[in-house]
Each structure stands twice: as structure tokens, then as C-alpha cells.
Picture: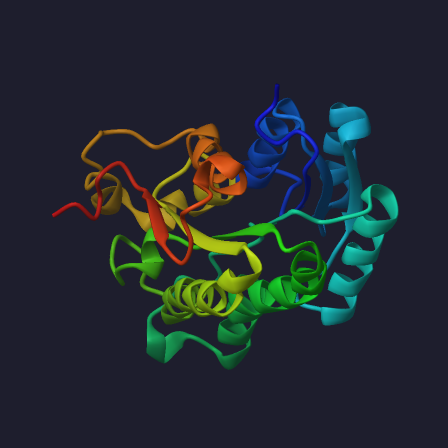
Length: 248
């Protein structure tokens, strides 16, 4: 019996990287899903791969109206929403504060932070009605410490915000049996990380105690646990997947 049998999830940023990994493991464990991304080609290909378990919706996570559309699609296709995985995100410009433009700052916060607010706001009425739900917000080790090769104020600010928003929402909606947790990955082998490796630099990579970059499934296994009923007494907390980078 799958650990997510009978559950319906929305996963953002699902076309590649960690989002695609989450979707594959959720499908294996019996979930039905709405996969969303701006990358329609990749998202549609993944939905075809997963068959009846998933549908794809092209989705700009920075637009509240687009979130309403995704929720409507989920309810129309599957009747409910049990799980939200706020996974979409970008690194953005890796620039010192004095060189960071307003446009760059706003873009990073729109995708990494504001979308989490919009997503939670969109799904909470359905979860409240059902008196059940699990929301998992993907933050970063940069949401725990402003270090490790991430000099951008925008990225760090957005990821710290996700951590705080998670705690505030968990406190507010625990009475409805809705759990909200954040996940803070370190260095994960995703297209986004590969594209940024030259900018992040070897000094940061050398600070990984386990001596390697993680496979996305190593994050997905934790996300699966938090989404499932196995974590029924866990809410409002942050969960590191960082190979010990913040252990010192």
C-alpha cells in the first residue's frame, strides 16, 4: 500500500530537478497530482510519464489568479487537495548588495517568497473544509544561515522568509489539522545547481561534511515523509537536508 494512497498533491516547479523527483516518488506512493511549471514542455512530458497519476498545468507562481486556476483544475480533476509542495524557486542574481538591482531583488522574492504565500492562501480553504492537509515549503540552507556561497541578499531574504511564513501558518492553522513545514536543502544535483556551480565556487562545495552533492531523491524522501500521515505530529518546523553543512 502506497504511503500517499488516496491523497491529492499540487507540486510547483515540477518540470525538472527536485520538483520532478518529488512527483515521481509521490506517484510511486499512490498520490494523484497537479504538476505546475512555466516549462510546459518538461511538465507535459513528466505528466505523460506518470500517466493517470498526474496532470500538468502551465503556471506562473507569482500570479494569484494563476493559483486560483491551478486549485480549480485540481478540484475538477481529483475533487480535493491534501498536499501542497511549494517547490518553485530560483537562485537569481548572485551579486553583492550594492550591485543588486531592484528588479533582480523583486524577481527573486516574487518567485521564492510571494509564491509561497499565494500557494498557501489558495489551498487553505479546501484544506480547512476537509480538516486535513500538509504543506511543505522548500526553502534552503540559505534560509538558516547567510553563508555558503550565496552572497545574494535577495536569495537569503526570500529563503529566510519562507521559514518564517511556514511557522506563522502552522501556528494559525494547526487547529484545522493542517500541518506546515519547511525543508532546507543544501547542495543538490539539479539543473539549477549545475548552472550556478561556477558562481557558487569550490570553497562552498568543500564545506560538505559527507563530501558529496545530494541526489534530488534524498530531498524527496523527506518531502514524502512530511506529506504523509507518518509525520502527523510534526508542524511548524524546519528540516535540513544538508549533509551536515550547518552542524558546526
